[in-house]
Amino acid sequence: MRFARLTYLFSCLLFLGCKPDPNPALPQAATDVMRNADSYELFSLELVDNQKPAGELFQSYSVRGKCPVAVQKDREWITANIERGLAEPPTKRTYRWSQVYGVRAKRGESVVELLFDFDANNLTVYWDGLNRSYPTSTHVWWLIQKKLFDAGVQHP
Image 1 (cartoon, rainbow, N blue to C red):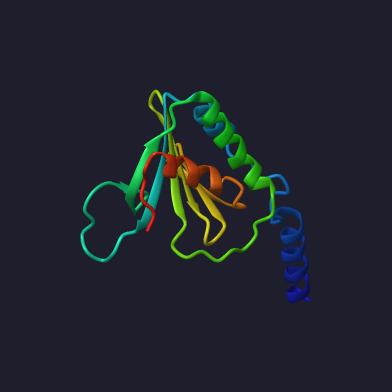
Image 2: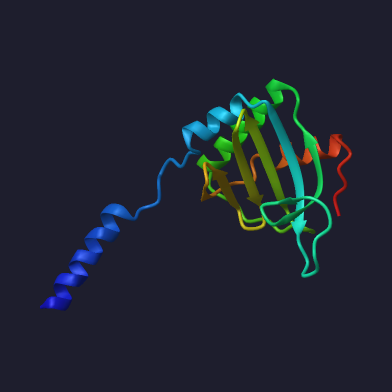
């Protein structure tokens, strides 16, 4: 009898409180920082090998290259497409090399960092001392690729 009650209670909790968010969204305050940032940068990243990494790191990844996004319209377009990617279902793709990118937006003392792992269709948001992961589509992938390519950032 006790097992049946526990099973019923667990099922109710699972059904009521553990469903994925049907409309995932970035924290509003983080989105505000991104939309009104003093600086906005894109990063091409690669895994750090076991040796001591040389150069800049971004969330434990080695920075292969980076570029600023100076035009406000471009920042808004990238941010809108990041949000759009959260609403679309991920599609699995196969890439020739690692597809890990970062975005850093700063506004005053506030910093928002986004880590995209397009191999895993995952976006991790680092904001206000916390981090949260979301499934994401590759919708913003081509925008990041184009900006980095236009800035002369080398891909493997």
